[in-house]
Image 1: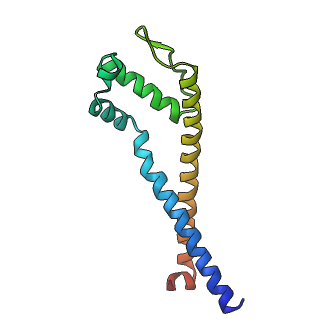
Image 2: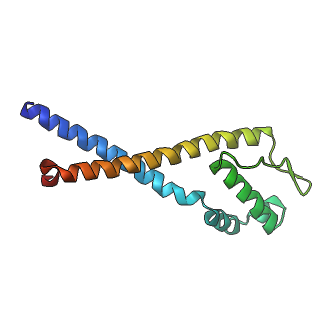
Image 3: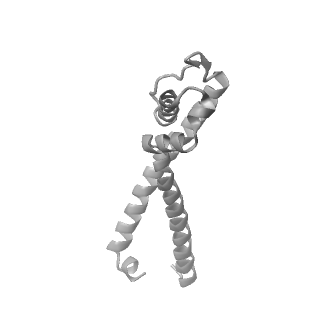
Length: 133
């Protein structure tokens, strides 16, 4: 392989690696937002109970049900009413199904990219040229 081709391949590898690492870091930074602890904090910090009129405990239950619904493909269905108050109509559930598809796909993509990054580092560290960089 000629030197210009080698240089081009190194630049391409660096560009692809940078992009994969950036997407992996973004994916990893979003994961804490999908935890029950974050949901509890946001419900309390945003005065969500006052907005829903359901009280703090029921609002937290509803928020946790939504969180679970968007992160777990096997989550139970969301209720149309909570304590006699309209909750999740067909349009809301349809939207949350779309969100779930993105969230679940993004989590799998983040995992795959994290594994690819680790493999790339290991491979690069095992080669003389990779250690020289």
